[in-house]
Image (cartoon, rainbow, N blue to C red; front, side, top):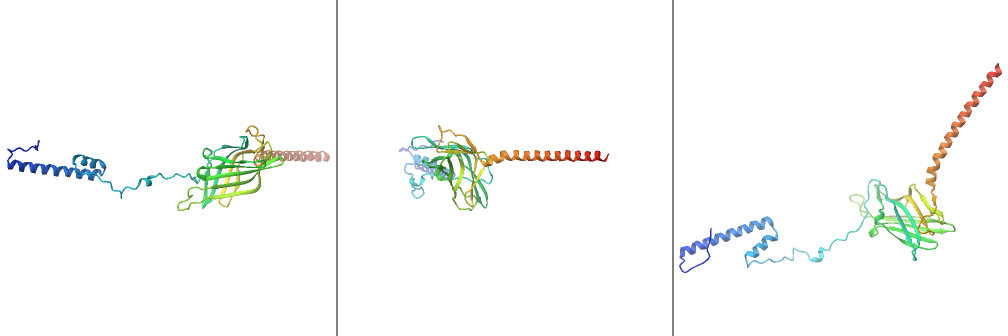
Length: 289
C-alpha cells in the first residue's frame, strides 16, 4: 500500500480527510510497536531507534540512577588462607636468606602445616609458591621469616650461634584465615615458642629430620614441620653440610633393631634353657642306671 504525502491544488476535501485518517492510523500503529519494544527489551536500542526516527525526541541521562565513576573502583582482593577440615600433605619448599654481600647465611627446607583447634580441628598447608622469605643475618643471631601475601600468615625462626653449635632459639607464627565456621568472627591465631634449643647442630653441619615435628604454639594453634632440614651461619656455596639426624629419626631406625635384638636374645635364652634341662634329665637317667 502506497501512501502519498504530496498535496496539490486539485486535492479535494475528501482526499485530505482520507490522508489525515491514514497518517493518524500510521503513527498510532508506529507508537504502539515502539511501546511494545520498550516493554520487551527495556534497553537502549529501542531508545536510539526512536531518536533516529523522531527528531524531537531526545535521550536524557538520569544522574540519580547512575552512580559516580569513582564508585566503580574495583574492590581490592586480599589473600586469606582457607582452612580445611581434613589434613593434607604439606608441599616441601626450600628457602634461602643471604647477607648484605650476597653470601647465604640461612637455608631451610620443609613443609609446614597450620593446625587450628576451634570447636573442631582445621588445617592449612603453607604453599611455597606464595611464600616470601625475609629476615636478617648476623654473626651470632639470624632470623628467617616466611610470609604469605598481605601478611595473611607467617612463620619465623630465630637462630642463635653458641660456640661450635647453632640452634633455633624462638619460633613465632601467626595466621589470619577466613572464618573457620559459619557465624564465626574474623580472627588471627598466633603463638610462639621461646627459650628452646630446637633443631641444634654443629657449625658447618645441618639439622635433618624426616619425622614430623609438632610445635605447640598456643592453646588454639599448632605447627607441624615435615621433611625438615636447616642450617645457619656457615653455608659453603649455599649447600647443606653433613646432616645431623634428629632423635625421632634415630629412634624410628634404632627401635626396630633393639626390639629385634631383644627378641633374638629371648629366643636364644629359651633354646639354651631347653637344652640345659634336657641334658640334665639325661644325666639323671644315667645315674639311676
